[in-house]
Image (tube, rainbow, N blue to C red; front, top):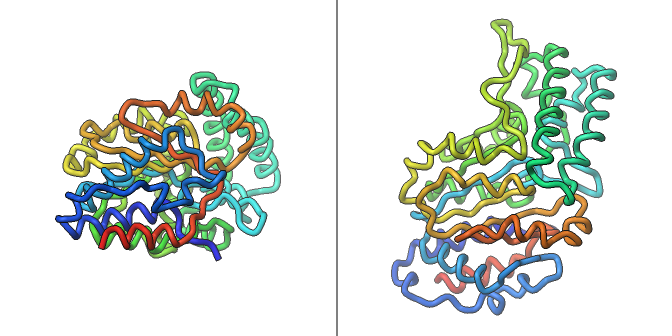
Length: 329
């Protein structure tokens, strides 16, 4: 059975410590001793000492100072299950029965061309950027041609194989219980994303979604997409446009940022009052290539006052949770 994920553990430990004001005065023990899972080969940390410092800051700050900024596809949702690839929000539409075989074939051809570019570690973000715009615009144009109906979206999601990571209930419910803001910043399709978390029963009031939302005509037929395109490598621009949201959270100066691509590293750029930020990344695909070229990845995440943990496997033993709670009590 899979264990809770690291991000759930960090949220729980921050909440637990936040309840005990005296605990904030204590010095954190060495996390490698408390959590030997950090020493596993599946966990890649650039600077363990700095990670310990950041996590201690998150724990001592407690729930009142915490906010979550996260990607969705392959970050909150699963990359694979039982050896089979799980769909992204776009894939949920691509694979549904309402899409013609011809359209599905064209969408797959686009994916084969552009996905390789998206995850190519030898290309810079600037080099990938125009290709992502091409991919999204071409894919969205094909979907518009299909005349998708708004009232079919719930059925499309129910019949899909999309699923959230194990432990999601505890993660979302604990955040809701302690009113910790969750900012989901996705380059997927917002309507599908919202339906997924709604059907999972975790679309709580503390959750805000920014994504590519469909635009329907008076008859509920897809006619386009609202606003400016969000793709995996322009999240910096989107983050800056959401500065008003982050200004309302001026007291939430501690951040756990979750993503699975280089572009996700910029999702917190709209936050001006960062005290501690821990960036957790999931290497879902082409892991060996990413690790071979890890110097490039590390240069990318070597941002002042931030750090990233790179995870190859997503699950951590529950013993991590018990260790943190024991320290918090």
